[in-house]
Length: 329
Image 1 (cartoon, helix red, strand yellow):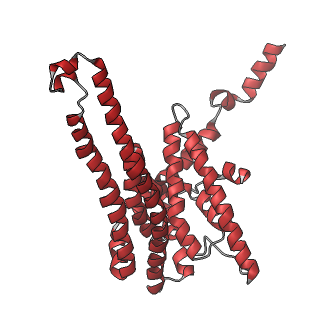
Image 2: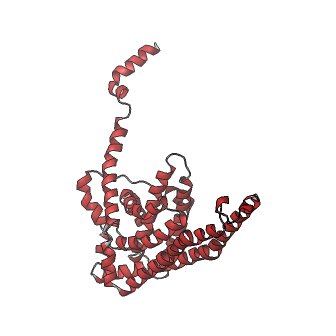
Image 3: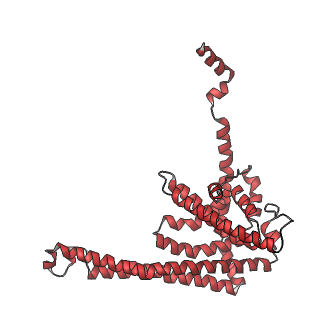
């Protein structure tokens, strides 16, 4: 009886038996093309570093801030790191050798404690260099660079406005539309402060989420790269959205609806993390980040995305990138 029922069900649904997941596979294939096209478009928009030259040529104050970032994070921070690895550590290895055959007297080789003491002194001196120079310099650079990034974004967006790109044109408001009944006076100030606090909490929780995902075996690194790319892309465009007073709900909706474009845009900024040590990658990213802030200021993201719709012949599905962070916040 049971066998007859099973055979009857198979005859009634032959396609379901042979192809169990056709709709899912078609859906995945339909998303792959628009995701790839938009990711590449975002990557190419971030790589248009000639915009940096254009912005700097249009604003002396912006050029000064960019030069200060290069001086602090490039010459001083990365220069100090290079000096440590190429001069200080080799000098310590010459003075306090780590192998017996490098010592001046053979009698020192007879005392194993000498090598241990040399190693301890060498490590201690390097740690002193880190504690009294690198870590304070890192904190100082982080705080000062954060202030400079705000100035860089402000000067760049002032250049955009001077070139007659008002907020409607700069944002192509048919995709990011601000409601007409915006609050005024104290209510507007309170709403702005509330959105800023909410945004800080949201991004902080999202950063913790990204850090934890990086430790997941097998696919953790790939997910970490993707989410870090999204996070840095959001940071780059947030200056522009704040400048043109785009509400937090609208920017999150637009960002999550076009996640592939922003993942591609943030990818070049995140690459140093996976190829260099933490301090070196920080120095490189501190130099690159303001450049990508400038490319974001000059990117007509909505226009680029609209122009690519006929190319990929499909609508990219929205992914709730900040779902967990929004729930916790």
